[in-house]
Length: 171
Ligand code: ADP
Image 1 (cartoon, rainbow, N blue to C red):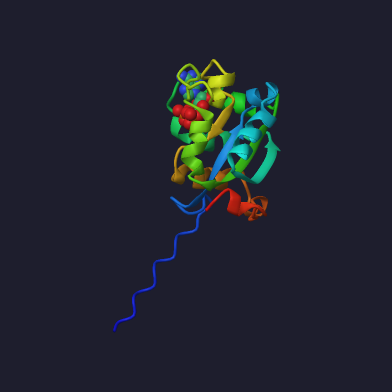
Image 2: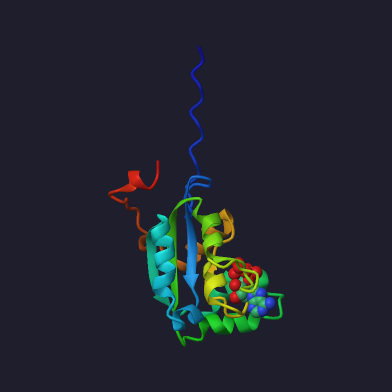
């Protein structure tokens, strides 16, 4: 009998394991901080059952903001977007959240990019009315989550920890 080949080890990335326990990059943008939405955002992810594994206040450098929004470089609002993120009139609250399907679920909690299309009950749907001031960012795929977590956080700033009551949240 030939021994079965061991299963390929899942590739460990900053965003965890695709389809399993994932990590996503969530950022409260300067307008969200000015609007006093920090606790509200954290509350919604926390009460859902997701785990906060990294958080910091940061005024991103122009380089960081440009890299983060690199795929939008050709868009007419790009320069204004970078200026708004880097102005320092309020910091960005950068976070890493962890849990099952957190990347896709995080996008649902946040709502559509244009607040006028965002469902009531989502953060953008409840608190914002302008696409240029939509309060919050969330990674849109496993690949971008991996890149964005690596861009905004050092490995030592993201923590592996367990809820003591994990079995009551995930089974
Ligand atoms: P999302 O943030 O939902 O992933 P995008 O990646 O398409 O959406 O856009 C990134 C950010 O660029 C948006 O969250 C918003 O702040 C800004 N943005 C997008 N479209 C516009 C627009 N038409 N005018 C001004 N800002 C925009």
